[in-house]
Amino acid sequence: MAKSKLEEALEKYLNGNLELRAGILDGATYDDGTPVAHVAYIQEFGASINQAERTGTIYRSIRKDGAFNKNGRFVKAKNANFATEHSIPAHTINIPPRPFFRSVIANGKTTWSAILSNGIKNRGSIKGGMEYLGGAIVEELHASVMTWTSPPNAESTIAKKGSNSPLRDSMRLSRSFSYEVNDDQG
Image 1 (cartoon, one colour):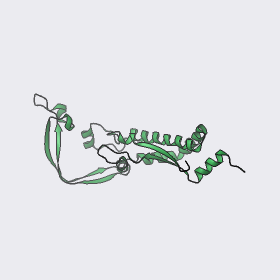
Image 2 (spheres, one colour):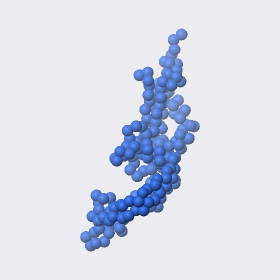
Image 3 (tube, helix red, strand yellow):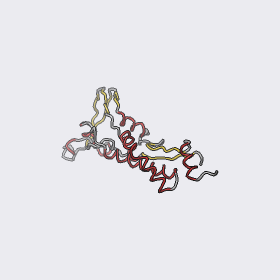
Image 4 (cartoon, one colour):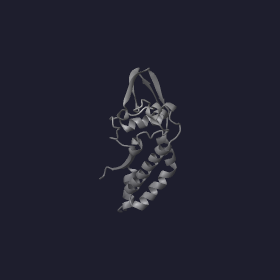
């Protein structure tokens, strides 16, 4: 007896020939070449990073009357007209865990099967349903990063960046989510 297209699609899915991958896919990097996935891992699970003693440059902007612009707050090098070198002692940077990814997975356990089912129904195939689910997961990851607030940034980070927006400094993380559906049968 010949199988229906739905039976063939379900068999392909159940046999593992169709795979959905969602998250930060290979190739996403920051401008300095650091992989976004590496930074995301550190943010997700937290880390303690030992910094050796070093010299650093602080950039500021001075007005024509000799007073500091922005009450002496640091500025980017390209906006500075005054720089000072400082010795920075050895120290440890503690980054608290911000499980933006695991929270999406935990919430998805209760919703993803319905999203997949709707996707299959609306798109007419298992692969179309998985693509629909992949898009939904990407949206959920993006929303998780864009709304993450706890724990907040350290006071020193807030002073340096001028805001308390954990996970959103460069927006590279939130723009790096993607998905792919692999079908090894073509």
